[in-house]
Amino acid sequence: MILREPIITQNISTDDVSRLLVGKATDPDFGSLEAKAFFNFSPPIQQDLPTAAATFVSLTLQLKFDYYVFGATDSSDLQLQVHEILEQMTPDRIYYSGTQVLYDAPAIGDTTFAPGPDAIADAWIKNTDNNATNNVFFSIPIRLSGSIGPNLLDDLINNRNILNDFAEFSAKYPGLAITMPVGNKILGFTPVYSLPTPTTVDSRLILKYVENNTTVQLDLPIYYTSINNIFNPVVSFTNLQPNRSGGPLDGLIPFQDHNPGDGKMYVQSGTGIMSKFNLKKIYDYFDTVNYAVINSAEMILDNTYIGRNPQEFQLLLLDSLNQFRDIYADTLVNGKEVNDPYLVKVKNGVVPLAVGKETRVALFNELTGSTASINQATGKVGLTIMTEFFQQIISHKDEKGRALSFALHPLDNEFNKSVSILKLAPSSAKVRIYYSTPLTSLP
Image (cartoon, rainbow, N blue to C red; front, side):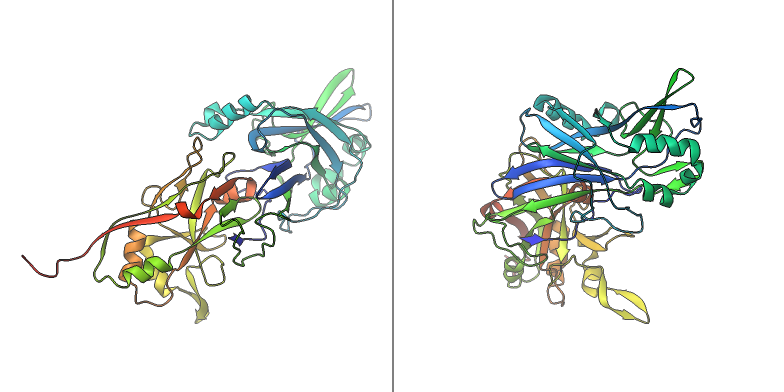
């Protein structure tokens, strides 16, 4: 087992998936986990602003849930509370799962609801298929009290310069935190405001006022927006607090090997838990075999967890410090990074990942590229074909710097923006290799 920390849970404009999490869940092996969502918001998207004749009506926070659920599958009541953040969040800072942001304890909004398990299961199937046209969502409106609504209306009338300076705006209105005081599951919601054609269920703040006997609505997005050619870098992230005390994962230290007392292997996205596999026995065996040609190589894993599993995972190469293996050597030549000579030689069996982000290498999967899927109906990890990778490492078995270990790692969006689990029995972890050797003599 390896704990990877810190985990970036911040939503940025280039993400494939934007999601915030809120709720509580408990697992007998992983312990308890609490998720809190934090975000600030932009000035209103509309250009028509109120005059001095306007009077405040209401301020409502609407959250668009995408049916991502981790934890209990019943229809128990869930309580959401909204709090005002007490410190400014700025885009020049990176926000992680463990980042703490101060918020006011008294809630300015409160609601209770109970999502139905049948609707959740059906909707999640639709939202994870390859057809985006059948995606479904549900929204929860939460009426907000306190001074934030009237103050916003006052600034829209009397202090409009603040609308053109997001740093000043977010300093005065630092944002909101969403918590779940009562609940047994973690829900996912998307902060995206669908410009230029927002939907009625999109997440946003809704400010209503009356002017000339007409009720007017202004929308304040809680995601990246560009208003009148002014870019508003709204910050949003999830804080995840695990408590593993007393369980098999108690005592996890980042990037240090951990052997659970129950002998199982675990993966949990969101909290940075990965399973580590060592290939030493395979190397030792093929060191005794000359001129082997790999016909087929496959890894088989049985997942015993019935619940939210990752959608897809990668097999990422690890170095001796349990960090992700880089495609570059540790040294520079003439001021330039140099390709790892070993990985260059086995390049037909590995795939460099995350250009422009963290550099790392995944084992090549001949069926699906660099990723493998998990059967969401049975929870079983499918066969992962690694024929070319094993042929390469055997062909270069005398080279230094062998890729010895790898980590079972959910895809980035799954790992950073979700909570999901794999529980693997070590006895099920097998690598089956079919190979041929040349005849030593002719009949």
